[in-house]
Image 1 (cartoon, chains in turn brown, red):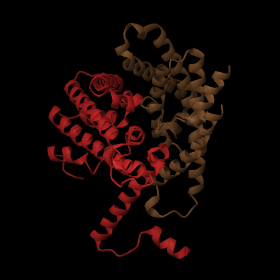
Image 2 (cartoon, rainbow over the protein chains, first blue to last red; image 1 turned 180 degrees about the vertical axis):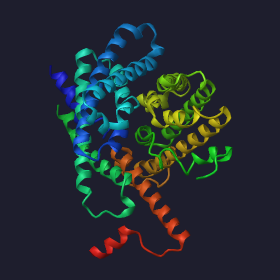
Image 3 (tube, rainbow over the protein chains, first blue to last red; image 1 turned 90 degrees about the horizontal axis):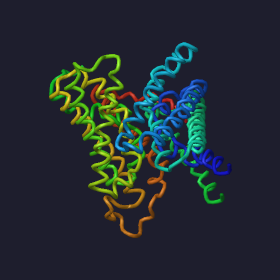
Image 4 (cartoon, rainbow over the protein chains, first blue to last red; image 1 turned 135 degrees about the vertical axis):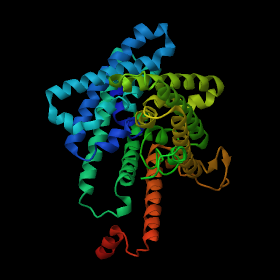
Length: 192
Length: 220
């Protein structure tokens, strides 16, 4: 049990997918202008991550031992079809949410975080429960980074920023500072 | 708009529409593996190979691929080339493969590659798609080398493993850690937008200061 909690915390803050491993940067730059959208994007991500982890575990245990060279291709196909299904479900259930997420929902497919999770999980040899903890931790970490970023960006709207720095440059420099702050959590590793 | 010729297909991706610095695509590898020049170069070449191969195949097959499933087809084609690149790197340069780790496999989800297939290779002839892929690929390599150069120079005081500043230099360790990636790209973009703004004012002969500077002056 302690192991599972540890995997979750580690994926969430110590090795935060966005701020320490640079995974999932596209939504981080794109939909982090509003806290409410960021929260929804985070929720969509957590959902897809959990399904991905389950599928990756299934593929790893039952199919890939027979054909290891198909690993990458089978992961991406499964993830792409899943995202398609999630997209259709959200379109039916909540058209407003669908419009707000816009292009970024289909782009979850090309979100490095999703494939990254499947690959890291394989490389570390996680079982089913460990994979779940990893997926939930990673998803919470992504959401945390998105929401932090969105709230900082909302408050910079009223600030007097030089023209040159407006836009992506500012977002990157804020991300750099956030990333530095998250490095503080690395201390958790040695104390555990 | 610029005229669309074979020449512009090639040149455009290198600087004017540089995938990383202008279009902000393919940021994950650009930030994650650029802590040394050697890693940046290996990543750049692997991506270049995948881009070239998949552009060729997509423009070759563009009439056969049904419109409804085109994205999945592109991803399958890209994943095939990435598997080839992954296994080749593991066989040829195992050290670099180990250093890049999962990020080689993650070339599959590099938005830049899928973007080029959707925006260009699926609509143009094989020759022009290849030119476009070469241009964009070089642009990507240049951006990665810029990042890698800055970060290795400041973070370890060396280039390609050779010491530049001598033993007296205190390395800025933060530059080779994750925050350094964000900061380097942020400052590169700042320099770029400063340079573009200056060029724009030069051309019009307009001496007016940019808004930000003016309001900054008023605040002071």
